[in-house]
Amino acid sequence: MPSDIRIIRAHEFIQASPAGLLDLEQAKKVLLEVASAASPSEDYDVVLDVRNVHFDLDAADLWELAAELHKVRQAFSRRTAVLVPPERSDYAGFFAVLAQERGFELSAFTHLGDAMEWLDRADV
Image (cartoon, rainbow, N blue to C red):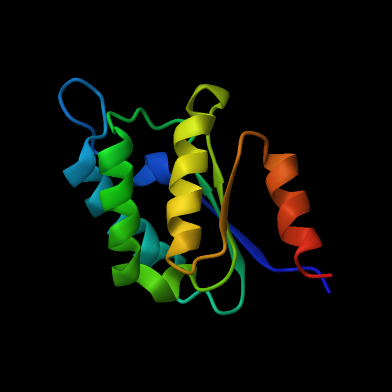
């Protein structure tokens, strides 16, 4: 049975720094706002589209951001596909591993079609 899927475009929640970049504190705030928009997600999977977001996050920041997921566990209680630009796929992949280690079904993709296929396959 196919999933119900909600696509959330993170750039709609972003108030970047004066330099136009999203830093760690802003990323935490956006995570909470996105979770609020996604919650409750018991009935659908989530595609979180961050392709139009410019990050200023390093590996330590991603670790800390992944640690924040426990605060929004219900919003991402089903599968979450994070959609990123190709140049950020390594960072997104690292974030996905960190989230998976915390019990989240989260994976990173650079193409919407791949994300949708992953979400659909997981229902089989």
